[in-house]
Length: 233
Image 1 (cartoon, rainbow, N blue to C red):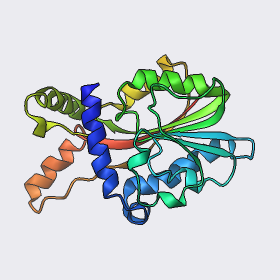
Image 2 (cartoon, rainbow, N blue to C red; image 1 turned 90 degrees about the vertical axis):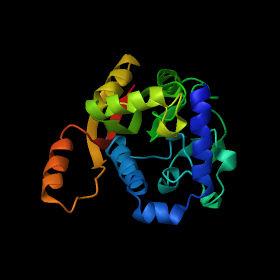
Image 3 (cartoon, rainbow, N blue to C red; image 1 turned 135 degrees about the vertical axis):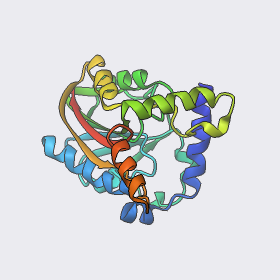
Image 4 (spheres, rainbow, N blue to C red; image 1 turned 180 degrees about the vertical axis):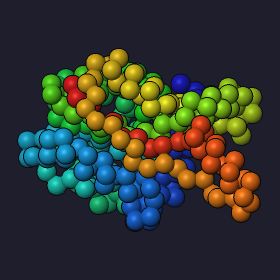
């Protein structure tokens, strides 16, 4: 829990400088909001009967792109999110994902965008999501997925970060591979419907030929991809 509190302090600092216009126009994560909404639409479309939840909604950028259904955005840091939030057109709820304040079987569609590696307990988060989702409902999980080699390096940094805080990736208490996320979803009794990579993080190219060769090799074993996984209850 202490590690999660450290991550939340980093999240709050992020939201203090957040610019919704810059984020949506030029940032890869901002663009991925649009892709996520489209991917969910491809599963079953959107209707006025939908009850939609965005777990870890931030400013609600994704919900603002959907023009149908009842929309709810949940985030523990909503009270700290100021810039751009005047535009939101959803019901805001301040709560944590490990204890969703809703009745069972309420939501038809749930987004978990860039969240599952930020929470205190990923397994409890998925269990709560399944609890509040209607039978046949859809869950879209978007997350940074690391190669096994990079995950190992990040895990070591996380351990050493207990003694040298500068080694921590402050906002990310967890590091996952794609396989890790798939296993957690299946273990939580979700059916995997579709998976794709939205984008891969690019390293700055070296001006030296030998280093470009080394970088090309390393990208095969040392990478992070932002993946989108559509699952169904």
